[in-house]
Length: 68
Image (cartoon, rainbow, N blue to C red; front, side, top):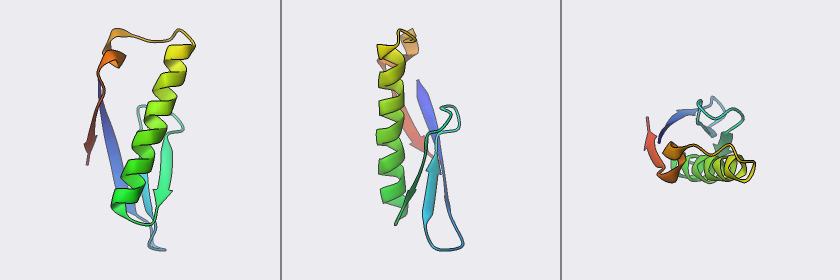
């Protein structure tokens, strides 16, 4: 499973990172790297929760991130 991370800088200088394919997986950071690291951690938590709830599908056995 490849997860696309969308990253952009807000007008106030903060960075926002989002994985659109996972609803609610959006974070802010003080730098681009910080925002990407936080969104990757949140995405993994969201996927772990899906697995715990029995919603796991075969593509969750391998996860790859790609920052845009």
